Length: 326
Length: 261
Image 1 (cartoon, each protein chain N blue to C red):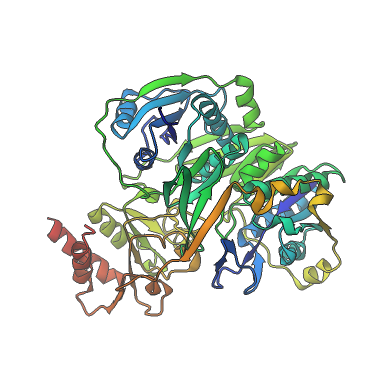
Image 2: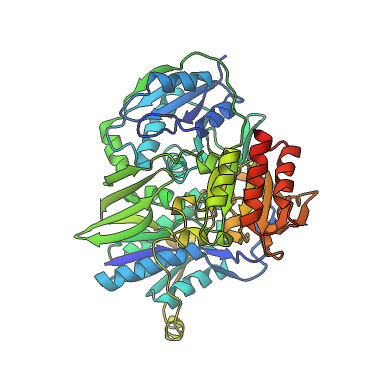
């Protein structure tokens, strides 16, 4: 007997490129059953996207072109609900962006599903999905069982290793959304304007394996931070102080009101480690801190703490890494 | 016009927090108004001054949750509503939204509610889905994560900065809007405001008053269940060094030794 599939919402750019975080969701979903993608966009996925989704484990992609603005989260939730009604999945997995957490919540209202967001892991315990999540600035870890037949889970980056299955392109099934239902889902909201940000040339901050962060101690000069990030192939992040000062875009802010990161390696330079910031990074694998204040709270959670001037320590580290990595 | 602001009482972020039997132990330390909800109260007060609106602060929670309402009243809101019921303990986001929606409808008995405002997330970190779920429960247009907000001619327009894009959304009133911490700088209550707040009414309501079936809320109505909670073990083998000219090289060596490059 075929088991019920697991759906993965395929996060993609406006020009149809699959976002990197999706590959981890596909690998995670494959542990629980056959993997089906859900593509919500009036423009169907291209050959490249279908090949990539297939190669990472999706056998099928359900394409839903809602008759309504597909960037509105309730419309996306309605579109997924149509696929849920059609294929009766065990679970729906989404990335952990603010938009997709909203989609998860509205999907819960629409389908009665139990919902967990910010999940750092997911396992099948005798037919019940159990999600792991860290709370209180990642000082506690909880395990949360989903008691409903359908589980909806928004999963944080780096929760699973990407697996290349070598499968061929995913096959496509197109679903129609009742026009009235899509209009009703939008509840009168009109998208007046949307500008997608151009990619920075560095990895996406929220899903990067390596994140180098600058804080107040940079005094506005992010050069040493960016150079170290580039030699490590990492993303550049910032504290609230640094973004409020206008030293770097607000989108780079890591913390409870900004981006949450859980990279393998976090390096904080001139970062004090305020509680709001720690809430956005404390689940990182390895934490390294460079700060000239030996009393900085970040040293309490750093695997390697260096009391020193980031303006000499970072360039020296960058130079040494360039030599070692040749 | 009438604006309802939903606020939450959270444990003080600076205090050490604990979980007991899967729920936040609220018995220790002082709680406070969720800092991000102050942005929602501020947004309501600015709109109320421009459009002559009544501002109602609404919360759901145990006895001391009324402190969050009081803070909103001290900032300048007109009156408060506090839903208090033993059956609420352990509610998930859907149970909480059901109760908040019933309370908004209760406020509507006094006249239409034009705008429901919330903060962007609760800083006790349990969920950021509430605004979208509440909008769905109320059947209202949802305009979440607003960094700018304007009311004109019976419609509301917001600007929002998302992970990958910036958007402008518009919808007719009534609507639900959540605001971010970038949207404004919340005022600090003045002494006169603190004194005036003592005389402002706070209506206390039970689930029965709201006609909400208790089986849909609390731990028994929750679709998820916390199985266990463990304090994260402290990181082991931590190293703290002081730069003596070789810290950059030692940092690089650490990354190599720990296979991080």
